[in-house]
Length: 78
Image 1 (tube, rainbow, N blue to C red):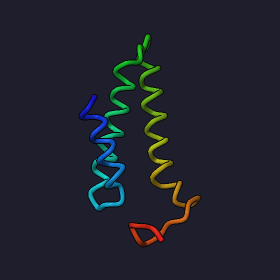
Image 2: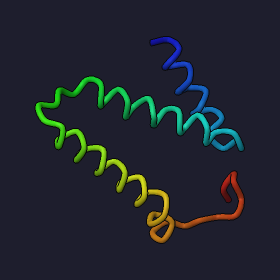
Image 3: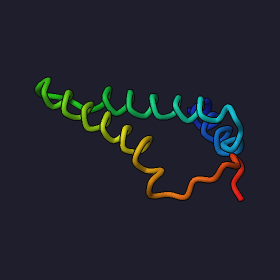
């Protein structure tokens, strides 16, 4: 638990750094893995559907969200 909180706090304090993407991806993989591990699936199609929804959510967040948000060239913001 302490390591998890430490990683999150480190990411929060360094999220504008050039290497912060790695920590953000690590936190996302850990969250999705925990979600899949702790949910009880009675049928395979339920798990496949959830993974498909997560896949399309990720595509939306990466490729579509920039059209709705202001994108700046400066990594540290204005």
